[in-house]
Image 1 (tube, protein in one colour):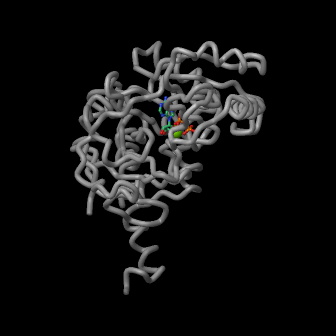
Image 2: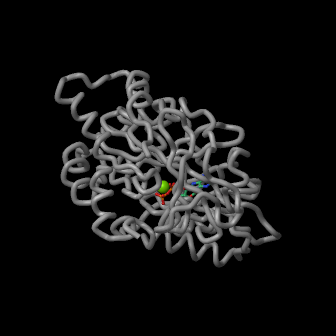
Length: 323
Ligand SMILES: Nc1ncnc2c1ncn2[C@@H]1O[C@H](COP(=O)(O)OP(=O)(O)O)[C@@H](O)[C@H]1O
Ligand SMILES: [Mg+2]
């Protein structure tokens, strides 16, 4: 009973050091993310180029669509690709992303299994160019890229889509992580607002602990009914190192780094976020604040490390999921 008392909940959340949106913006995003570097993460094409230049792997770019007439030419350009993904360069929250997993004759098959006629496909891309799905609603360009084939470890806990791994990195130190699992609702995408599940990952071990779906705490995937707890994320140390290096790459102190794990190509960077969401705290049932303060203590003492490996070691030693 007591647990459901709103005051009790508020107290528990406070005790956990939950960061709210006001504090995130005022104390972290505004203080640590110089505005001039935003284009590096707000434009997925720029992020891709920076990652490649830094030797960090990303999904291969097949094409960029900048003008209306290039949409019609795309069918021919992509005719030898069985699967691919189209996304607006300035998109967020999974909006406007098309995950094409196959074809049937002239039609494209979407991740959720439905078929899309050529005209419908072109119409969607045309909307994308006009900025319908993009930050600020400005006209945008579209990326067409390799469709990730997820690691088999996720087969039982992912409904027709590619799970992604989100790591929050503060001043180059990984501080919290989760994996997001697509559901029937989320149509091949792993964004929480599209209906995906968020599952907290214990940072030292790379093992999943518990998850949230909307406001529900869950232990099993609602579509596949397999347990989402106790999964060991493959190549965890590599993921942490890549995440840590995104600090130097972006120049931004407070970011969310999104990865996918490809069956053949291993970890790939999908995108970076300068205003990462706060639901990762729910997925972990842990607050960000104590961890962020620990890094700030290093900063105050002039002990921030320039070595990504050292930062990962610090994170693994200090940021275990509690409770
Ligand atoms: N290349 C890809 N292959 C397969 N799935 C993808 C690919 N790119 C994106 N997705 C799916 O779409 C989701 C959102 O993609 P992302 O690039 O992070 O854009 P957004 O900024 O809208 O979140 C990913 O979490 C993933 O589930
Ligand atoms: Mg994303």
